[in-house]
Length: 166
Image 1 (cartoon, helix red, strand yellow):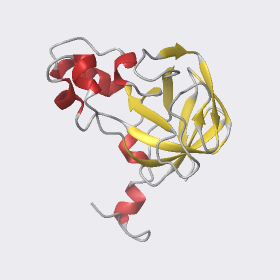
Image 2: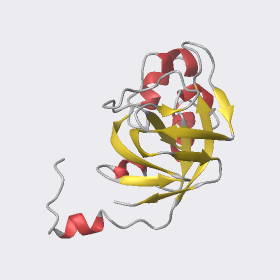
Image 3: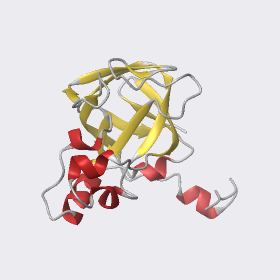
Image 4: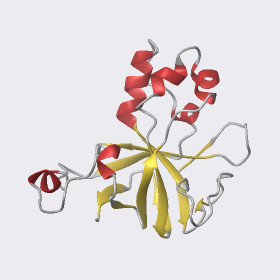
């Protein structure tokens, strides 16, 4: 879908959010192919993403921070016939609740002290089949979250608000 012009009524509708989101969980991947580590806070650094995460992006990288909605953890669990899935299994850095991540397309948003910029969707990888069991890859399709780059450094903590700035 192409984005509507700035003068269209649809563009205006796309600027409205009911309330800010909230960070529910933060995880880092310090070592490849090893379990993630749950943390209470992480420092978001321009050009590389979250300190302590092995998947440090390059300054031009679209994948510095990965985010997923808590509501999608419930949906994926339902598709698999389970309770909501453990965020550790998704390999995403931040779990947020209360804001539609796909509505952040082409926007910048604050999380705690940091400002991030939407760079694209985060598609599931083959690890989802291993982590979630048979059908895990398909259960995550369209529920994998988004990718972002850091445009202003700062600390992100569990409980922080997530708000659109542009």
